[in-house]
Picture 1 (cartoon, rainbow, N blue to C red):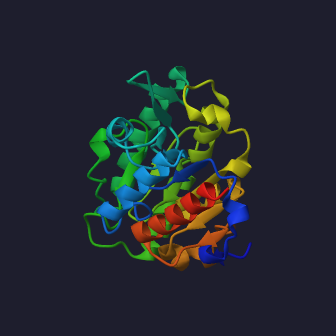
Picture 2 (picture 1 turned 45 degrees about the vertical axis):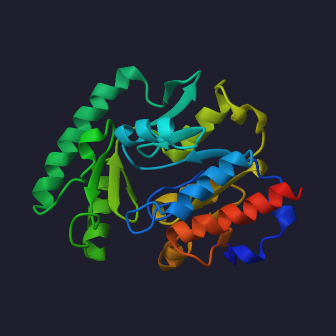
Length: 270
């Protein structure tokens, strides 16, 4: 496990070549279920500084449609990598990671899994945004229900895995799905595709940075050469094989603002 250092110790030289930022939303960009004025201003500041800005989230297609239309972002990766939404000539477009011929079969398997979960966990509640999802099942473990015991969360993750499904823990949900994809699969496919926009000018992972807050961000911490955890990730670090490069002093949205200021200063002084 690599050592995670305070973000304040990152040198401007290390960050000066950053051209794009990928970021988790819940409890990384948001704080206690809200996006603060300061965090949204920080997002605009990143975009106005010329950085390519890409939220990477487990949230549903319905939310991602809103995000790509109304937030200052270049693309959004949704439902843990099932698709990428982006704008082209003022029109919302999408890049699907799954092939059409397998989608119906995967959805049937997900429906069967949902019935098995209900039998195994009688008090389970789906996330309140489940109706807006296309490809995954989100189990609420603390967003609108009393917080689950850690042992029950682990049992749910193991149960889904034993059924052949992917299962990832976020700060609020357990997301489970079928299909050979994840957030980084979607990111790689999007960056390699001939999509419109500034992403064409970013040729190396050395030009990207990622920021997240929970175990489902671990694949990104492993994938990106530079990554950041907001302070609330501390409780998970001892359980991660791949930790972020740096950690912020602030938690959640405050940590996002902290990284935004450091990045903008480093880019502007280049």
